[in-house]
Image (cartoon, rainbow, N blue to C red; front, side, top):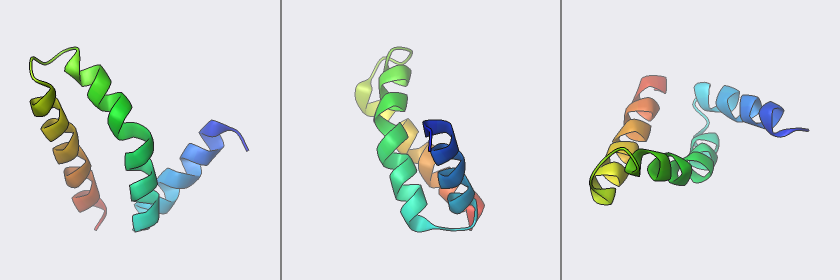
Length: 63
């Protein structure tokens, strides 16, 4: 199974409300998103808060 198939499966599971899939997505993507966004924003703490808020918002949309 390649990475893209694995990602598709994770996101499919997440969309059905699978909390383990959400946790895995967060583990895989939070730090890369923080690293990318911190290059655009002034504060790493603000960046972490923004990415965390993004994940919380996304989780709320699936419930």
